[in-house]
Image (tube, rainbow, N blue to C red; front, side):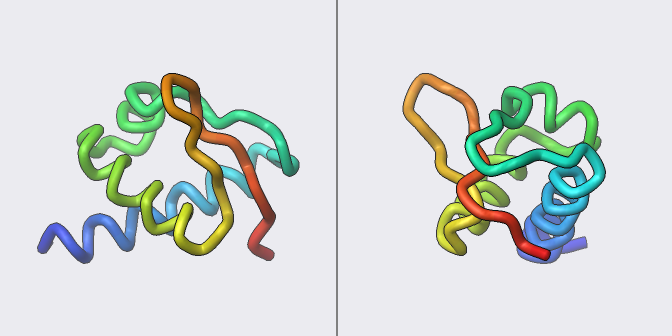
Length: 74
């Protein structure tokens, strides 16, 4: 599986994770390391997937902090 496809699949997995765990706007997602372990991908793949979600205004990444839900995608 190419890196681009892996990032796209991981992006979808993060969206599913958000929906399954009923995260709300303003909630924090687990740390990058924890998400990588749970989704069985590298931290770099998580970083690339979060960049995609950030560009779609679904999450907000704060320096030195975790990832926050910015808007829900239904």
